[in-house]
Amino acid sequence: MGHPGAVLKSCADLLALCDCNNFFVSCERLFRPDLEGRPVVVLSSNDGVVISRSNEVKALGVKMGEPYFRVRSFLERHGAAVFSSNFRLYEEVSARVMACLRRFVPSMEVYSVDEAFLEVPPEGKKKPEEWARDIRAVVLTETGIPVSVGAAPTKTAAKLAAERAKKRPETGGGFALLPGEPWDDLLREVPVEDVWGIGRRWSDFLRRRGISTALRLRDAPDDRLEKHLGIRGLRTAWELRGIRCFPIEEQEKPQKSIQSSRSFAVPVRDRESLAEAVTEFTLTAGRRLRSQNSLAGSLSVSISTSRFRGSFFGARAEVALENPTDSDITLIRAAAGALSSIYREGHDYEKAEVCLGSLSSAGTVQLSLFGKREDRGAALSRAADRLNGEAGRRLLLPAALLGEKEWHPRKDRHSGMGLEDLETLPVISGEK
Image (cartoon, rainbow, N blue to C red; front, side, top):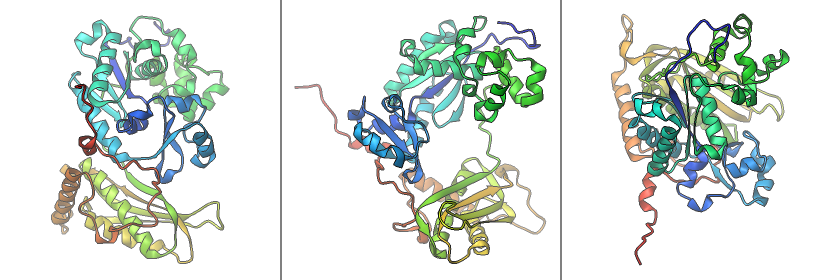
């Protein structure tokens, strides 16, 4: 499977991608086995758009990202079950899936909440498709989540193999693109926009130049790819040739910035309600900040009205923090100050965002000459994270956030389930 433009050697080793099938839908079905075989969708925050579809819904032609109001009647006519998103449940189930996978591989990279790249162990390299199906069976038995596993020499090819495993029932959920074997037939079937790392960012540009499939991308000249797509695009083509350019990264890379934002269920006009929302978003961002062991050096707040109702108003303010911090107390105080500087009366605000920037590692913080890090506030925040995590709900939070808030995103179809509720499910005995 050589290529005249390739100066690197093809990889003879294998890695794999494990991809959870219709993940959010599969999580909801854990508590509703009666929904197996029935159309099911999960909606985004505020019940806005479709973000997860069962195979039955895909067969009906409902697209990902379809606004719910447009397909609501259609889904009702087909007897579909509709759920508001339950991200706490999805994160809990994801942790179980990843823990299960870790037992069977030398190393792995958690790529997203429903995907992980795996190093195929020596015993799996002998019969990779059989190994992939065995992994699928174990994950399904232990977590209840169906997965697809694709093996290949490179990450980009493994993504394509996993997609083939997902869409072709005859594969049994496992498929391999092996080193040295021809991949042309599969690559010819894959639209260029479906190649990992290409998407819409580059697909229109490539199609205008006659590169419409993964096969044509693989065979494009190196100098042309590097000129127009940069080194990342060139490496993607190399990976389609079996040359590994993106290794498994066991250590999760910290985010360079952290955002938390939501659209409100109802427009917010008064300063107090807007401050409550900004406080909640700051807490969410702070929790993510501490989870990756980082400190924030700056914070920004953005607020905006609807672009489709009346005249638009939007504003943003950024503040530099005196010392890098992960203390909720400091972050909330900074967010309140930023909001006060941009709030204007008389507007119906529909969205707010908090962004933490200038991130640095908590282990390498550089103290200023006269400043001192607020250890008590940071310690209190970490203690709240631990207690809330153990309880599976928010036990500790600012008093301003107690009670129901009109601006909270709509979750009219929220299942309200968590993994702790598995203990309450009825047990069906086989004994007479």
